[in-house]
Amino acid sequence: MKLLVIYPYAPWPLDRGTYQRTFHLLKALALHHEVDFLALTEECDDLADKRAVFAGFCREVEFIPFAHPPWQRLFPQRLLNPLPSNVQHWQSPAVAEVVNRRLTPGRYDLVHLCDLVLMPYVLPHRAHTPFVVDRSRVDLQFQLMEHKTLRFSLRDRLLRWESYAKLWRYERKLARECALEVVCGPDDEVFIHRHVSPRAPVMVVANGVDLDYFHPAAAPDARATEPTVMFCGAMDYSPNVDALRWFFSSIHELLLQRLPEVRILIVGKNPLPEVKAYGSRRGVTVTGGVPDVRPFYRQAWLQMVPLRIGGGTRLKIVESLAIGTPVVSTTIGAQGLELTHNTNILLADDAARFAEEIARGLTDPALRQRLEEAGIATATERFGWPAIGARLARRYDALISNHQPNPPS
Image (cartoon, rainbow, N blue to C red; front, side):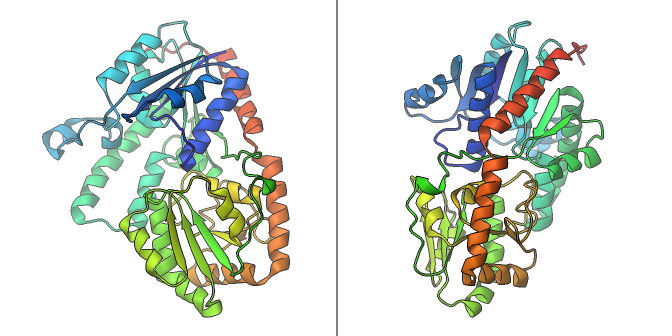
């Protein structure tokens, strides 16, 4: 099968969770199908090294120079534009020209997109070339959860409601037009079928992990001498920032009362000023971006995932399981992974219980050992990328064998 894969970025280096998913799915699909890869790139530096990475497993690689257009003014441009503002922000005539040149009838069997912001580029061609959208998150679900959890001014809330209405209509259009939506977890599937369309074609493909890279032997076992809890992720991503805000406002002091010597490691690129400020607290270290996250996993006694905004699944959890660092998470943080409290993870959803589960994990070596062993076994059995990619490739084969050309809308 010949696939055209289009991403809104080139996922390399693998320094973001979404990059892990999109890179490894692309690589896995290329093991089973002939893949041409298009990526929008905003970088001004030399892309030769990055191109070489993808050329190692894709037939053709094309990077499209891209700059976001300015955000539209509310009136008249934004109000009169049927596209949601986040989708409009990814539109470019230059990108459309490249995609139109590529998508001639009969050239490809299927188009694989990353996220719905790219759908306008392929809609004109869907009558002769079906498309699939891999969704690192369901946009409407994610924005509604942000709206419920975060604080916005009245003006921002009104703007967001205008966006939700358009986004809901656009989600429904995606459900009608695409051959398949690939989502990260069962919660995403339930949301789409309940709030968008019960007939939407959806496949759950949970996030995986590079089992060779995130392996217990891949980094020295250098557990800290003091009880150490890690939080890993991009520190300019609103769910991660909100998770830390909740931890330090409601959980940290409770934990210190139990374990005054506890240390907190915040590991991830682009920490916002709010995140950097946590580094001034007792026992808290904010590393910023690091060249290799594995030594921090091996240093920490536990990883915490106090997420309150869901959608998708958490690569930080499957990485932590694979490398042997037990995890304490909210239910929403671990959604879609089908993990079991007290077996391969610890789960808690209120502040007091979350602090208690962290303290229990830090003070019970036998529990940590049991969680470590169960986590490694679970990751090895269920979360390897080659097996995940093979399952998706087989679904694509079935899609094409059953495909009937659609009449243009």
